[in-house]
Length: 178
Image 1: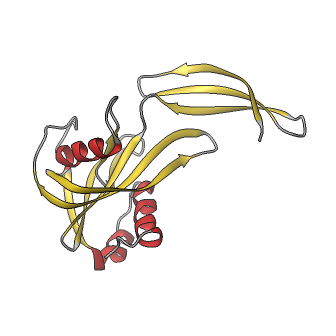
Image 2: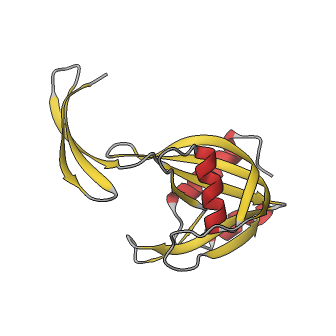
């Protein structure tokens, strides 16, 4: 394994920090890498399943200056478990809580230069429960039948890439699909 010889913070915002890594490889080559580092405990993305439907959200995404299809998601607050954060985000974003949340996968966003991790979970046994969230406008809640999922996703123009990864993980790596 290469060895990190030096690490220094070169910039910081409320959400991110940029670190410069000085890394020495086994062949004695030394390279500098800049890494975008999250400032929290990571995030959670939830695949909420109600009967034969998955519940999505559409919300404004500042980086693309457009609305994007996503799943309920958010940061894990200090002191929260992944499951607690998932249940809070479900209630804030779609008005449901779950008595059956299962961890599926820990997803690296772009491991070459971003250290942010998203915990992918599936939530079943949903019941109505609403918490006030931090969104600046109401989220568009969209329900899609599982058997129409491919058609639905192919008709969307802006999809959070973590959604596609989450659905793939659910379909290919688990017995929880369908």
